[in-house]
Structure formats: C-alpha cells, structure tokens
Length: 106
Image (cartoon, rainbow, N blue to C red; front, side):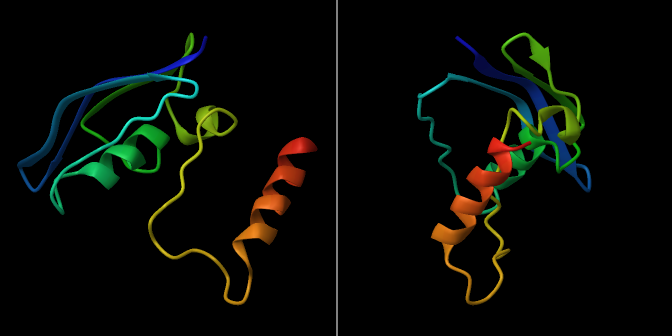
C-alpha cells in the first residue's frame, strides 16, 4: 500500500521559525487532521507538501517515489487551496466532472 511520508519539514519567515521538523505519515483512505491557531502554519505545511511553497528543508515521499517538486507530484498529490479560485457562475459539480474527464484522458 502506498503511503504519504512527510519528514523534516522546516520553514522560517523573517528569522521566525514557523514549522520545525514536522513529520506526517498516512495511507490511502486514512484521514488526518491538522489543528492549530490561525497563523501557526497549517496551510503553509500543505503548500510545502504539495510543492507550491518553498521550505528550509523538506522530504516528501509517496510509496517509493521521492517528490522533489510540484511537477513530480502532479499525478500523485492533489491540493485544494483555500483561496477563491473558481470562476463566477460555475458550479463545483461541473468542475469536478470536468476534472474527472481530463484525468481519464491524460
């Protein structure tokens, strides 16, 4: 079974440590939660795992494949940002169906 293995994540902003030696591991179908106050680094951690945010140190592996950048993880990892990114007047159901069609033929 493939597992997501995240280790040694560290991130600093302006010499202030936000994330220090974070470790997370989960398998297919497992649900994990990130709890914390606003600004403690939950969203930043997810962005680092997915590869859209740089980190001071980062190790991400899915199964036996080490993911070093966003293009290597594109077909393995998915990330839904919290920022508004949907076009106006487009229903989420339509976009999900569109995504499924694109993935089927890619």
